[in-house]
Image (cartoon, rainbow, N blue to C red; front, side, top):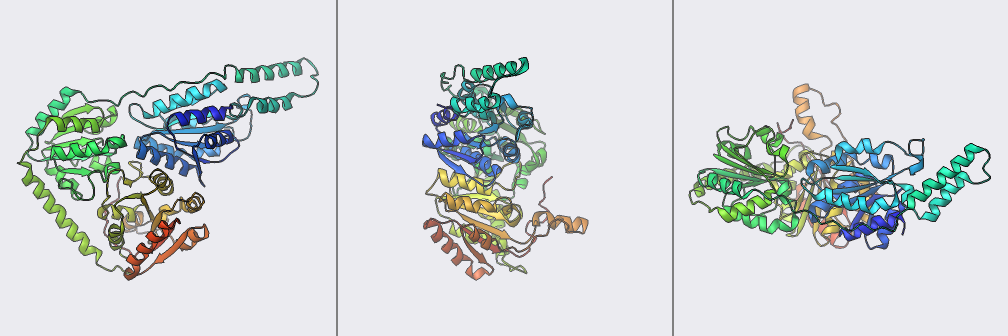
Length: 576
C-alpha cells in the first residue's frame, strides 16, 4: 500500500462515492487508488468546479464531499469555492498535494505556504508529516467536517508520502548517488536516508474510523418555552433556512413537523422545495411585509444578516425565536427573545411534538396567502409583456416551470435572470434546489450540476445560468460530455451584467464594466461536444424546451441560449 491507497481506504470506509479533481503529479496516487477501490473519479476543467461539486454532493447526501487538487496553483484555485462551502456550512474534505517533505521552503516546484493560505477559510487545516499520519488525519478530517457547525477542512499531503516506498527511495537516492566526498557530503547522505526511513516508520498502522458525535440537540426546556411563546402568538411566521437541511435523510420528518405546526412558512436556500410544489402553509412573496406584521418570528437555521436587513425586517416588538447550530449566528445583529443552540431540524421536530396548531391562525394565513396570490397574478401579467430586444425573462421562467419534471433538480448560478427565476420556479421536493448560499458566489453551476446528476442519475438536472456567470464554467460542458452526464443548461443571455448595470447606470450614469456581447454560447457548447440551441422568439420556446428534454433523455447535455430583452422587474434589488 502506498500513501494514496491509505487515503483511498479512508474515503471508501466513509462512504465516499465520488472524488472530484483536476489531475496533477502531486496527487496522482490518490486518484489511481480511489479508482481501484471503486470510487468514481470525476476530473473537471478548473479546481473550483471540483470543490463546488464536492460541496453539492455533501448537501445532497450528508456525506462530506471530497476534492483532491495538486499543489500550489491547484490549491489557490480552490479558495473561492472553499469559502463558499464554509459560509454555506457544507462539510467538504479538500486534499491538497504539496512538495516533498525534505524540499519544503527550498524553492521546489509549486511550493508555497498552503497552510497559511487555507487556515482562515476552513474549520481545520493539517499537514501530514509521515505516511502513518495520512489515514489518521483524513479520518479526523471527516469527523471535523461534519461535527458541530459543518464546514470544509484541508489536509495537505506531501508527494513523498503518497508514492510507494521504493519509488520515493529511488527519488531521494538519485539526489545522493555516487561516492560521498568530504564530511559534508557524508552528513547529507546520512540525513537524507534517515529522513526517508522515518517517512515510512510505522506505516503498517491503520486508522480506525471514529464515531460521529450526534448533532446538537436543543434544550428541552427551551423547546417548551418556545411552545408557550407560540401558543400566545396571533400572527406567527416561520422561516426555514439551509441549516435545517444539513441532514438530508431527515428531510421527510422535517417536512412533517413543519406541516404539523401549522405556522405560515417561508423557505430559503436549501430548504426551498421542502414542502413540495404546492403546500397550504408555504408562502413565496412579500416576506418583508409578513415579518413586519408578525408578532412572533421563528428563524430556523438562518441568521439576521443582509437577507433580513440585519434584523430590520422583523418588527422590534415581535417575539423572536432563533435556532441555530452556530453561537455567533444565533445572535448576529439582533438578540432573540429566545435563543436555542442546536439543530433547527431537531428543534422543529421537537416543537411539533409539543405544540398544537391554533385555528385562530387561519385568518392570518389567509391574509398572507391573498397577498401572495395577488403577486402571482402580477407576475403572470408581467410575463405576458414583450420587452424590446428579446424574450421576457419571466416568460422564459414560466415555460421552464411548466417543463420541469416531478423528479428534477434546479441549480441556480447567476444574478438577475436566476433571481427572477426564484420568483417563478417551484422546486418539486426536498433537496431539489441548489444555490451558492449566503456568499452569493458566481460559478457554482457546473460543479453543483455535476454532483446532482451523479448523486441522482435519474433526476432531470437543470442549470439556470446568467450569461455573466456562465463564463466561469462554460468549459465544463466538456466535463459533462466526457463523463456522460446529460443536463439541461438554460443561459439567460441579455448581453450584460444586468443586476449591476441597472442600478449603476441610474446612479452613476455609466455602464462601464457591465456590457457583454450576445455571444453564441450554444455554438461554444456545441464545440465542446454538447448540444446547443438558440431561442430568440417566445413562440418556439416551449418546443425548444421539449426538444432539450428529449436530448438529455438520449444521454447528451444541452445548452439553450435564450436571448433576453431588458426589463425592470427586479429594479432596486441590489443587496449590500
